[in-house]
Image (cartoon, rainbow over all chains, first blue to last red; front, side, top):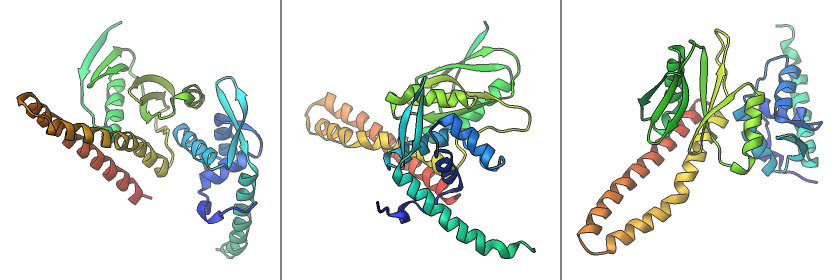
Length: 105
Length: 172
């Protein structure tokens, strides 16, 4: 599968965390909680923002519905979504490596 | 239960003013109960509360249950509806300002959704105006004029929404 990464990259911090959270099937609120926990409280996503992000990511085929829990829709990454996140992490690693120089500051 | 009614007109691009207005009322102990066209607000008397109100536009009604559940899970009570506008309320601890939109991009998209509704109907209204204009007789002259004023307002609304969106873009 080839993806036009340029269309999506760089991911915003919030989007990157949403994708990371969806490495396992989760509903919206589950994503909000997991993102806040993973980022040590640095990234908080409001329900309006998350709902909009889900809609866009779903129509772009990056995430897909994986089930329902009561009234809540559960989402997970598609293969395309996995590739995108992988590419984002690859680039972030390069950045972090270069960023080593700031350690002694 | 003591209630009071107030009339207020808010433009769609001034929804932050409406949110602030509802909060002011809540701080005085008047809690939003409902709103009907064109701006009749009903409030219920209660305790003074540190409430925040936030407004969103729902465009996919088929997904309303899932949408409202997400807001509820995040601690926002759905307190009213006005057309596509959804009214949410959250009581916050002192010093905290809860938000439903946590970035500029999603805020812009809210206004884009309203603009989308307006753009869809614009050609239809334009054809109607054109037909009215072609018809003869005193009644149609007046109708054309009234409709023309409506179209001016409509165009103004589209311009103001575009302005609001570009303001938010600059803040990025």
